[in-house]
Image (cartoon, rainbow, N blue to C red; front, side, top):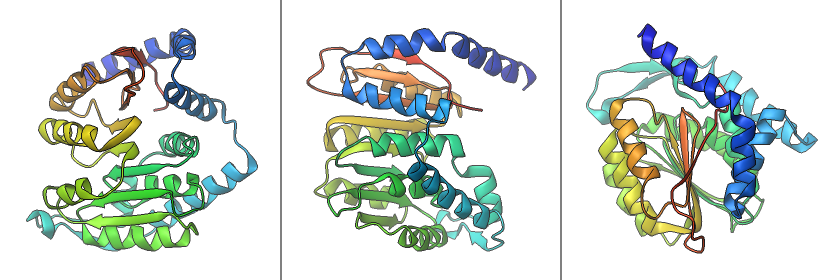
Length: 275
């Protein structure tokens, strides 16, 4: 365990040392989508926020504070498990961090007509930031998937508070049942955040099927790519996929860009956003 932590922090330190050169390499590429990632990264790192951004972040973080005081007990019966946890504990252990949420926010905000898919709603923390970033019209689309009914209801209530005309749906059910239905929807997603099943084969399955469903170009975002050896293997296959133009390894998260009009393939970058 100690050796693993040492290796992790040494790797992160190395990335921070060479951050400037990696950002320069990214800026040299003629890719608007890579430019979106670069801009979002720099805005979070330098805390370059407009007043409207700060107001949105405050609203989302106030929701986080509410969650961290919520003692409602969540059951996991849908997974045939007798496990129970409070909303407070789920938020503290599994909700996306503020820095990561802001990064997602700036990515979505930079897309003129966003169509976003999130696999793994959880308590709706990252979804709140995504919705706040979306243009206030019905052509903006947001689909988010979650297995636990109580978390779906919690997220629906929160999303209703965020007054947007966005076409937004929280899809409740086991992913093996709901994922085929998502694929049948008449939506070409241009931003896809995959954070619901930290296992190799399901992750690769989602990627394979969503490539067919995605818009061109599209940004795929994967969480917990170093969660396990299986997730590391999945990330290696994803970033070396022959259709991938660019990959950005952020250690905890991985991003790939697919753009059929771009001749570059498998150009890799390594950065680190935050601990």
